[in-house]
Length: 606
Image (cartoon, rainbow, N blue to C red):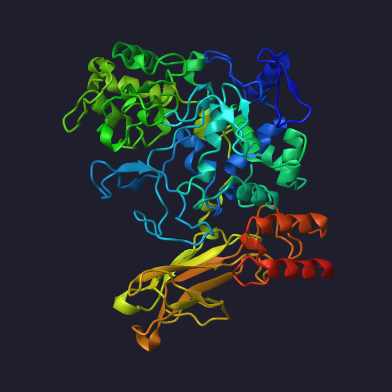
């Protein structure tokens, strides 16, 4: 039976035996120096064949922090290539008991600060106005193409449906596509409350690809040399410029199907005698029951008794089957020596700690409820630990992963560049109750960033506040402003502290590349000295994106330095999506007045 892929107009694929499909996949893998064995051929669903335009688009999307609502998180933020695709940041989630530093804590990935449906920063019940922390560690995208189900609980299965229409687009083998669509809508990982795909696709329409990144990989830099927008990239990949959730998933999945790490000493037949011994001990200690085959995982689900099931029931949360209680996906041992976080809850930091758990070393504990029977015969005693560790650390390490070379190369992200991030420099004056309000400035101060925000926490609830901006630093904790924003009301319970957010689109603003300003909130508070409290101070350095400084003309909505109807339609699409960039009249509200204000600017020209 022939199936037509509605994502690629005019494309017709007749089943998985299509020789052209396999030839393209083989050519891409050969281009990275990959070997066909001992790993099997990469499975590719016929509805989403690998093509170079789609791969490069997926790579760009994977590293673009603009895929998150606040421009601070990309896929690559939590999936770091030279850490085997895991997250080296060890952030602590207090777990079910809500108390930090107790046994049920999860060591996982920082996401975004909690934000409302209109992108105002709000206090989360657990994390307050700090970045939220995920409930499980980050799985690796490397070699993930071989897994029929993804995530620790396997909730990303093989049938892929269009997130917008619910139409089946991939009958089987679409786990990567299913995985790709979940983090952008998570209000912990990348999104805000009630975020919709239409908001993200509209945002990408007006975004400069990888504008926040520097040191672009060669293939990406070559593709972006002519400064195409996302519409042009989607046109090349899918035949027309429509940007949709399903196409984003298709592109991301295509890129990840080329992340095949198969140039380890094990693959090349160059294991040392000690590493060979480690492989033998891995087998003798029954580890290969779960971590078997050339993938060093069977991609199944096991309950090893790591923690009580009540803390996280794992696979059972997807299947509702009692037999799956406490089961989690078995990760691969390939490149595992590059990680500093092991298990779904990040409980261990070294391979030696992992071995100690399996060997029931003093101070370790296993929980027997629904524990897999195989665990009765799994041990890695200390004499075996050294050779097994050598195998995992060296014999199963692909040097391209460790060194971040193609296809595992990467750009430098905004969050990796300290000089471009806002910093808190102290200052402030306490208000009611002796509390010093805290400024929140984490969004990229990139000129052209229409989503830039500055917020305040711990201000007196119900009080009126305004943001002060100065070219000079604080004196005695307070800045002298050159600019003062419109008033904001701090939300919260009366008599307590609360939060306020100022949306400050950096579009058509007078700031220049490299300019440093200081920002501070001033709050009307009768309980403060002089009747006003002041927040801490943020130092903000404005910068231009990787494609250069945007036009200073506010009517040039897509910032391509050309004023035409694309800017008009781009603005209207963004206005209907309540994009903060559309606050042209600076009223801090997206309303009809902004449309007329933009039309006046557009007709006036630049």
